[in-house]
Amino acid sequence: MILASAPDLLVVGEAADGADAVPAVRTHRPDVVLMDVRMPRVDGLAATAAVTALDGAPRVVVLTTFGLDEYVFRALEAGASGFLLKDTPPRDLVEAVRVVARGDAMLSPGVTRALVERFAASAQDGRRAAALARLEPLTDREREVLVAVGRGLSNAEVGRSLFMSEATVKTHVSRLLLKLGCSNRVQVAILAHDAGLLESR
Image 1 (cartoon, rainbow, N blue to C red):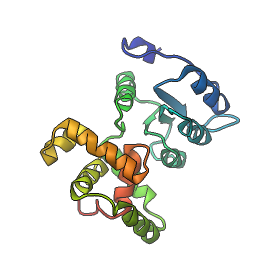
Image 2: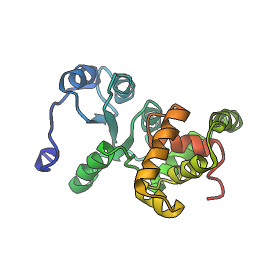
Image 3: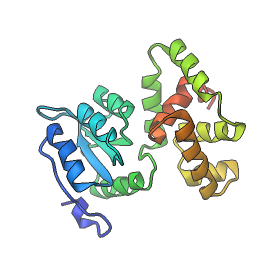
């Protein structure tokens, strides 16, 4: 009801649980999927991994009751573009779908920092070495954009902070995703944190 009330959004299908998610995505080809974390048969984590592995995969937003639910972190690693709490106000839920559909992660800077810090808490040395190795092909400018994305900035905010047009920022972000083998901005932010690039921020 909430999503259908927005004139620019169309609800094309629903799935009863994670097991039904992949067939529903194949049938309806949505741009964005809202995925519950805890579901019978197949949970949201497994369903997110399966959906994001499809050709032309939609962006996945994970819904959870708890802001620091361990399943959410694993779902983000599986390719989700962000998460929302189930008590998110209707207006914010609709806007989050729009943001993710545009290609941005819908996490606030504070939430992004909390997520990446939680990810990097274990095996930090090994993760840092691996992250630094992945960053070697980047240019200096791409590293600057990487840090800005890691801080949770939108494309417009990155452009203002680095004196670039939003179109140029989008080009840099697309190159970052390709070079780093990341599927979304959240994974780029995690990589920047693992590499130690956000510690002085």
